[in-house]
Picture 1 (tube, rainbow, N blue to C red):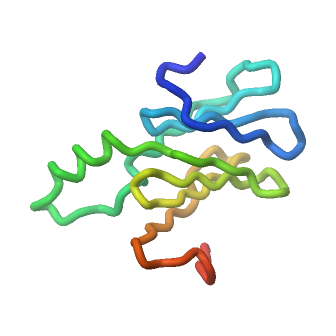
Picture 2 (picture 1 turned 180 degrees about the horizontal axis):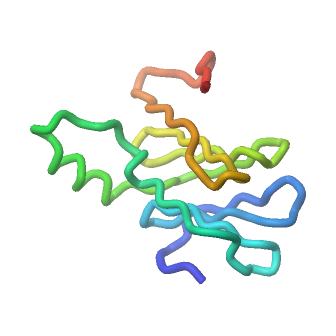
Amino acid sequence: MLSYTGTCVAWKPNGESFCVSTTNGELSFFNRNGSPLGETEGGRHFMIPAPPKARKKKAERLQSTHYFKNVCYSPCGKLLGAASTGKTVCFYNVDHQRIVATQYVTNNRSFEGVEVN
C-alpha cells in the first residue's frame, strides 16, 4: 500500500517485481503479487545538489516539491535509473537497496557521453 500518489511504475525485466515512484520522493518495491519487498528508499535528498549554507532553507523547500518522474530498470535488472523533477538522475542498486550514483543535469547538458562510476 502506498502512502502517497504514485507517479510511475517500472517492471523488472524478469517480471518478478516492480518499482513505484511516489510524490513524496520515495521508491517502493513490490513482488508481482503486490507484497512489499524490503524497505522503501527515500531519495528526495538526492534530487538537488547540495547548496551553500546561505541557501539551505530554500533548498529544503525545493526538496519537498521534487519527486522521481520516471524510473527504468537496466536490462539485467540490477540497476534502476530514476529521473527527478529536480533535474537529477539517480542510479539505484536493486540488490543492495541503495542509491549508488547521482547525476545533476543542467538545462544545456545532454545525456550523451555521461559516465557514471
